[in-house]
Amino acid sequence: MRVVLLTRGDLYPTNHGAAVKIVRTAEALARAGAPTCIVTDDRDHYLRFVEDRRDTVPYPPRFRAAEEWPPLPRLGQLAETLCARLGYPKEEIFLYRPQFDPSWWARAAAVGRLERADVFQAEFPGYGVPGLLAARLLGLRGRRPRTVVVQHNVEWDRLADSDTTCAACARSSRRCWAPPTTSWPAAPTTAVAWSPRDWTRAGSP
Image 1 (tube, rainbow, N blue to C red):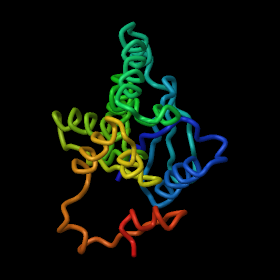
Image 2 (image 1 turned 90 degrees about the vertical axis):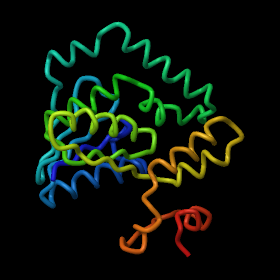
Image 3 (image 1 turned 45 degrees about the vertical axis):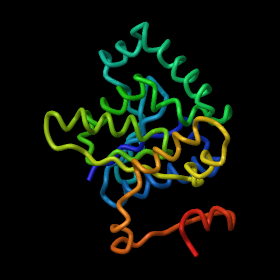
Image 4 (image 1 turned 180 degrees about the horizontal axis):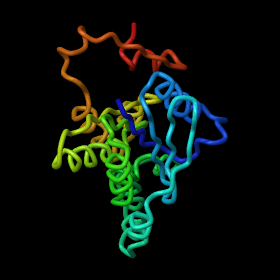
């Protein structure tokens, strides 16, 4: 199995919870025999973990040059504006911009193709769209990779608490990504939470 993690770029130094979780996930998967890559907002490189080694891999020159196509930076700025208008919290817009940013879609697809990805793992709900689009694109020419979404802090419920348009987006996204109810009894689930409120919302007693 080959995994591509899609996530935020502030991973090093690993001095906050999300960075620790993401980097340790990649390291553990690689040690278990699943080569794992991490794609971030870095337009120059992505990370590759194989066994106990971590490499910084440059994007192919042609792809890197394509990222400088003039409309792409403007579309990235438009993605931020759209997130703000939908009501995503200002301090978290960077986590939701990728779902509207074509540059992100392209990086996910490029690494998925280069690394022959079997799974795209979005490390926050906002990275799910690039993973899904990349999987569908790659599936046009062969086996379609799977796409999974990880919530670190019950993000959908936190957004649904807001009195903005993004509350409706959160509800729609949750319906889209949630597995069928019938699958839960057959699959053991582990929830890790820092507060009783999040523990309850994660579905644990």
